[in-house]
Image (cartoon, rainbow, N blue to C red):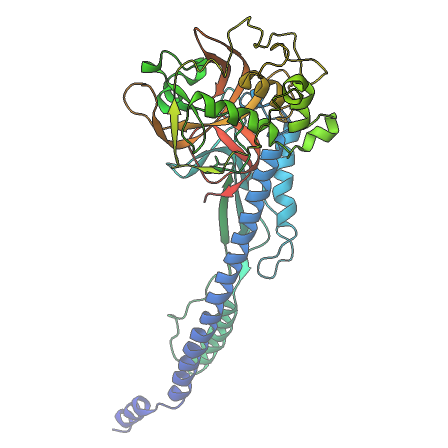
Length: 450
């Protein structure tokens, strides 16, 4: 009877249970509070890592763009990057990262394996590793910034420390009170946190005022189907021309375009290399080469022109045909020959007092002032206009994008054309890209694309 009573008393004895219950509740409350702190801490650290990845990717892609500017436009798409150049791109990424902190780490190191230099694919949203010809030349840098065992140490959270400390205490107390606490498990302490970003050299969605100096455009059909084989841009026969003259936003005809083309020379004043190369500008150049025309009665004048800002989606009016006033016949007195150089004191052979021929003047003027490092050709950009089906006599066209063109000269009627190559693959110009993906023309200052 006494034995039975002792067993019942043991079952009714709940001394210490309340204390353990309170401890478990306290542990839960503390855990929830500290967990909320940790969520903010982890999110803040991840945001800091994201900022580092963004800055590193922009720095790397920016250095990539600066490397291209060291080479002539014609060589950029076939350039294979040297080990020194690749190392310099990676160094630009690392230099930015080590100046920033994430969590309690004052300087973030970026692993070589976390820097990918390659070609940005806008459809798949990924970077395909490549280092140049014969592959597509690289235009993007992807960077991963991390706090992990591999780099910068893992992130230690407040919650894990607190939870493990409380768990140890409650386990020991429970054992002393004879309570099974096998369901209380210790948690792993450090965690991995990372972020990645991609910056790419992108095409312009617009070109700045004064950036376009050649008033022609080509059809998207010509650009897509024959780009690699273009030696000349033909404007006749007009019924199947894949290119046209434009007068920017004005209506286009031979007389208006004649004035506009000479006006582009007259209005040209922004020239960084002209002082370095001791080149005269606009009005002075025209006067030097056509003094008889501009100083003899009746006195002539040219209205200064600056090309307007143009954007993807804008519509330009076009016309095809010979427009012989723009490109005189080969071997005529108004046509340039290969020996002429109006930048070294020559006189354009157009006859004393006769009107200057616009296209030969444009070519001779801008080939020295385009900054491409080759004074024998004229490197500039032109719009590519929308056209479906087959090429036709262009009347108007919406701008799809812009292409780089290397002009070598011209041939006058009866077959009027501009002798030029259109660059289908990558070419980099100084300045910011606007995120455009059409064609190979890129700006040297990158954008974040991911």
